[in-house]
Image (cartoon, rainbow, N blue to C red; front, side, top):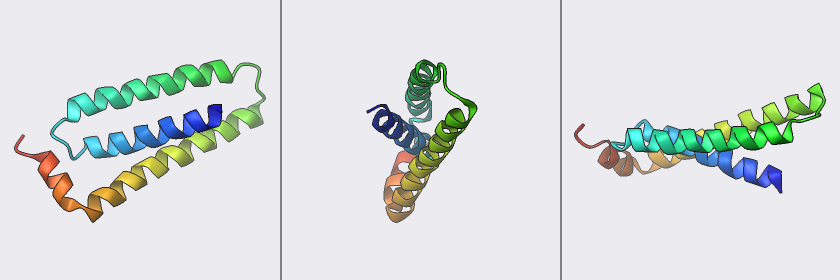
Length: 92
């Protein structure tokens, strides 16, 4: 169960942080993305207690993979639908 929560939070954080770069709502999106990252950190701290180094490394690889996947997912959405990205960037 915790792996599913981590995966969803990491995908959401990666996608939101990538989208925020092209959005006029950069500050609000960044605050939400950072809040998600804090939630991930709190869950992780509770789960990392009494784990061995190899298990912690496995979780680190999991985080990198799903965070990158979220960024790539949003990048493909923004390149496939450029009108959404340019409309969100607006006149800042």
